[in-house]
Each structure stands twice: as C-alpha cells, then as structure tokens.
Figure: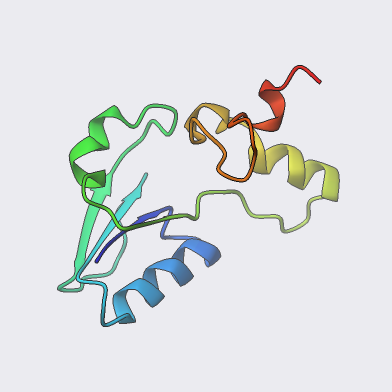
Length: 114
C-alpha cells in the first residue's frame, strides 16, 4: 500500500507519517511538503513542493496512492477561535477535491446556489 502525507512536519501530519511508517501493510510513504523532514526511513520518499494551489508537478508522486493524508495547516496556539478558523482554511480553496463524496450533488458548500 502506498500512502501520501501532505505536511508531515506538524503535529497532525507527523502523526500520519509515523503511523504510516509503522504500519506493516504500508510499503511506501511519500511526503509532500515545503521543507525536507529530518527523518530517513526505508519506506519514506520526500518531495519538496512550494505551490499548494497547483499540484501538477506532483502527479507522478501521487500516482498509485492508496491513501492520502492532509496534514497542512497552521498552529492555533494563541489564536481566537475566529482567527483559527480563518487562518486554517485560507489559501487552500483551490486545493480541495473537485467533488465532495459526502454531498449528493458533488459540490462543496461554497459552490451551491442555496
């Protein structure tokens, strides 16, 4: 099984990364992040990528993935709930999946007319 982890440096992303590396059924772990990790492992392959609104350059790394974990975000330390919500979702609108499997119409809430 191939797992892809976006943002493996933070609290959540590191958890995804460590559990993927420990899992016996995961044979390859690809991390995609802005900076390299200070970690080596036989299953691990790191990809540096700066533009998280355009993943065209990562097509080959994503090919054949069986699992994908999104750990990108910002720290909430010292932020109000409103600031945390605003900062956590800002800038990644274009990186969301084209369809939302949990909705009947396949549209993310912002795309609906009503």
